Length: 630
Image (cartoon, rainbow, N blue to C red; front, side, top):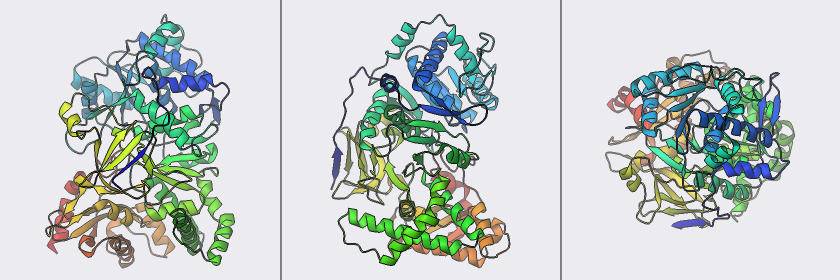
């Protein structure tokens, strides 16, 4: 199949914008709380839709009062937290355009985003983030007003610190912070409800709601013009498509970066569906938040599920039950593969012994794994990078179905997704309503539909290059469609390795399989222009310690482990497993353990945990040369 399409379910009027999702929820009357936030005692407290809308309107009045007008760009630089959602909604009610900035961004990056977007108001999470913004503003040479989530902070351009003294801050807002002061100012503002309503209605379906800057590995990032129609259209069409997962009364804990379009797209789906959302700003408290909030579904990247699995194995080994865990894992995978074969109409027999063991493990072991996610989650949406096939089967067999989807920033994230009742493991699903997937002659995945962006800001050349003559967005990814329209991503056009012998190798699938080893943190396949394919491997230091302890081996540093026969044997087994999926010419012939830890802070990973391949290759140039000298 060369093309697959799912028809649009709901067409919105041209006057509709993303704020209407919230007002439609309010109009439905009594629904579950729209958010839950930690109160002063640390317990989860409800924020009703009515309370939330009231606070949003007050904040919008304050924004209008400090000069935000329809079309104004307002930046947000923060980790994921309740105020992020609150401020963005207030920006939209004021008629503005949100501009997310990752909290790890440098002053140089911030300066470019402020210059390109024209944002002259910035919300920064803390005084430390505000100081980085101030450095960027010095280079910008224009006044910028900055407000903090955590405190009252006076910076270039001034703040509202002296303009209002406020009573008690609403739930989820830090007392005495700039946001609290803005809310107090909004409560006494001369800006009327009618003025707010006029500003809110100023944007329509085709107008820009947010500028999302791509994290590109070279050159300055491009600003994706995401419209109100992108967010609203995806929400009203995706929710009925995924009704088993996202519905009134469902609950989710948001911990992926809200600066990334995926988290925000799903958050708007939650606003529309009647889902209750909470936010977890720190990975350090994520497990605790999951246990107390108890979500019914999660949105995460594959690395989170890999960490959960390896953490569970480490605990089992520490209790002397490592072999039991591995058997339970094998049984879960077998059961899931059986279900997948049945769904495809293929003949599959599950041994009686395996069925019996699955029933037993579902009483004594799988509940502990589900308990890590709070005990109520039955579905998890996995995106941003490829999900290992066996990992997906393991979680599904253990009672948590991982639904892999696919999309890019330029498609408002979800373009395809697996549904609970219609899933093909190993694929990224089929098109969401209002979306067409086409496979070009060279294998590139092309997309057209409700979520596809309106082009790059101030960059007509890049916008023109991004689309085919008949309006399909060029994703840069390689893929295949099966006979039922399920999409499988097979690689990335720009990441293709061409060996000296002319063999084309897609590194992504190999890296994914090598990374399945519990002691591997990252794997990078190299070999462009070389006689054979090799791999750079970085070790997960936490899992390495558990691995060594479980085998009665002494603690080792990474350099020591890189020379230990048992560690090297474990890595070779992972590479052998990966090599079984490709031809001999495409397989990894040699590998080396590198001492670098690839992270977002080191500049080797994007905020959504994707590898910046060029950065890794540049950093590890000496390691790569050594592979081909010997």
